[in-house]
Length: 186
Image (cartoon, rainbow, N blue to C red):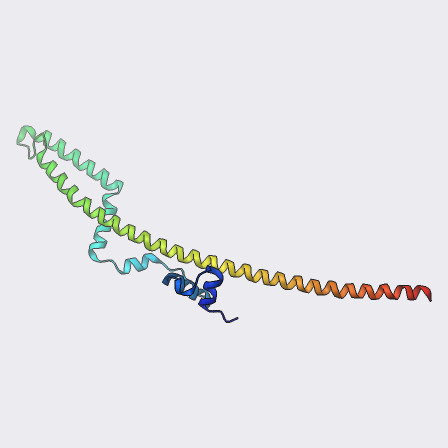
């Protein structure tokens, strides 16, 4: 049972081998070698991360959390109440809170592009995961088709065996039918 990638491509993917993608070739090769194809894509992505990538992910993770939001609300309440209370005593940032607006604008100006960088990286990770999912699903489909083929061959062999047994039994019954009249006449 020496199968090749060409045989598998024609049989299961209904395509010529030169029309297969690298991913499909890898799946067929792993099918022939009976090896697994699944892997941890997170490890591969983490291995190629730069310091900036890890920093962007951390900032996006912290900046989009409830703890950050609640801490920032507490900071704003402290800032405004502190400056309103200190208003009568030479407040650092009096009522329209111009300095606070400047700080908030700077935080937003820095945080938005960093979050967008992290989202772009997440999109790339999602693409890698989707490609890997396709690879694993394709291998599973091929393995299922191979199992169906084996079951069909087994069933066909059993049917042939039963047919041969029926022919043998029919010949035996016919032989007995020919003997029966001979024994009755004697």
